[in-house]
Length: 126
Image (cartoon, rainbow, N blue to C red; front, side):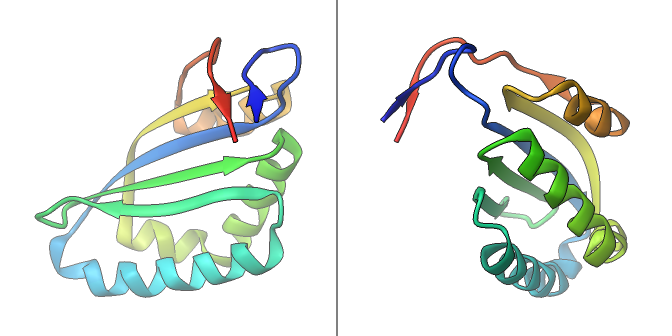
């Protein structure tokens, strides 16, 4: 178990809320399956990568967590090169909420998404 404190943590996470067309759910599932397989196999320091959808299939949340900002930046590069155009064709990001302890470099990389930045101040992770 690790207690959360800005002195001893480097992890970062975010939730991306996306709008989508309900009739594209099958295509989104296919893309999510490909992305999950790739990141699971190639990114050992990506600790969470999850897709969730609402009951009418018009909103998707993507939750991502990384052991460090360096890993998050590597993930963003791979995402852009391998999946970015397919993702953006199916999903429209409408809100990003970032958590944890991003470096200035990662904060700059995320700035195009205009994230809401939350400051973690107490808790734990296992």
